[in-house]
Image (cartoon, rainbow, N blue to C red; front, top):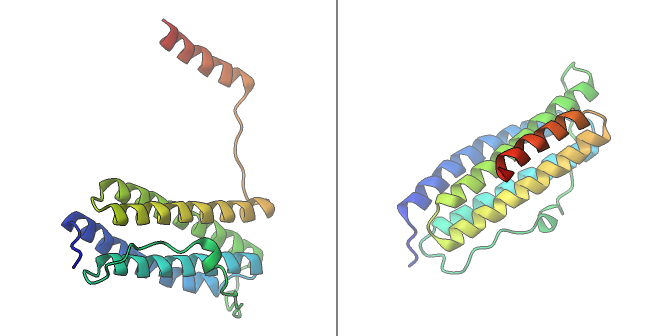
Length: 177
């Protein structure tokens, strides 16, 4: 029998509740998108999060004795996206933009939660699994970012050379005496 620390169990119980809500929201959002690439990314995120649920359930199960591994994104991307009719009256591209921004934010939030939790977890297998889950969420966040960039929906303000030089000089002065 494998017993894990109570702290790890509590963090995973919290994660499982969050996963239930996020998976159901993603399922709903997937029915609203018109772009097949975005739908496929959302389907991948749903599959990934379902796999994460199974990983956590195996980690919690005291009778599961094997080392638990998180399946790779490649293993999870074999499920095709099936488009369902959008019944909303919004412009489909605008709706896709909102959904893409939302699901990218969701992936970012889940990555942060998994990394943060991993730092507090005591069991090595539990910790490693959560680090891997966080890295997968980060990869998905980057895929969403690439999609958003390809659609021209992102904007990153750039600093000026003057601002960069002033910052450089300020910190050089601080550290060089």
